Image 1 (tube, rainbow, N blue to C red):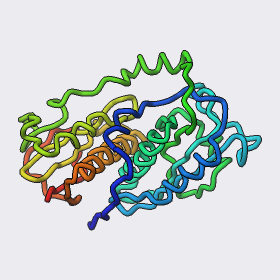
Image 2: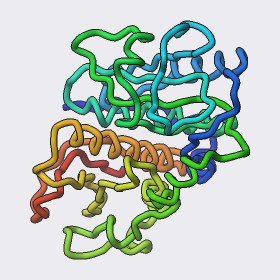
Image 3: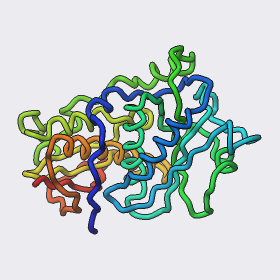
Image 4: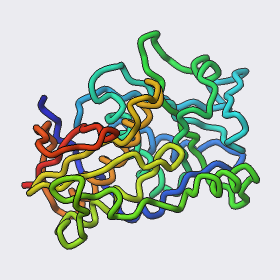
Length: 284
């Protein structure tokens, strides 16, 4: 499979990664026309390495979704606008959604806007009534989009504590050298230390961080970490999360002036049962 080259984001990626937080409390107003148009213009220029068509639809309670109740099961407060993502079911569809939409999220962060990935905590039927969606479309996630409220709701405070949103797995638990028996040191990571660190900070469903990376020579092998017994919907979410992590890694590498390409490699070393190989990045 040939993977597609994508453009470097026109923002300070590392600053955006560090600034981005999951926002669940918003000011009770829609985006300004200027912010809405700017965001949609940025979205129209985004692609992904998998050459998958990821569709992002803008839904507003103030216009276009009149009379439609957009349910988020009480997890979101004040949001007027949402971004809904659909994609056809094809190879790397979920990785493409994670990669491409996270690039939009990082741009939104630099614009001062709040977002949060929602995969299971929204009513699909409610949103589908306000969307252009086909019977064969996957509808994996949405995000509210708006201006963060200074006052956080009780639900948001409890959610942050429950998920440990600020916590991330330590470096040695997710980055490895040559196989899964040896942890990767920051010295061994070399010029890709920052790219890996920004990957480590990536958001994920329930803050599970279901990824691992094995550096082998000039190759970085990416694995998705989940039990074989999980259902298909949860498996898709894990692969979407990996797509988010790939966005952070790849965009940071490009921002640091590093070049490489995605490939499918033949993995020779032994992998744990719960580690599912997805893709490799070959540094030039």
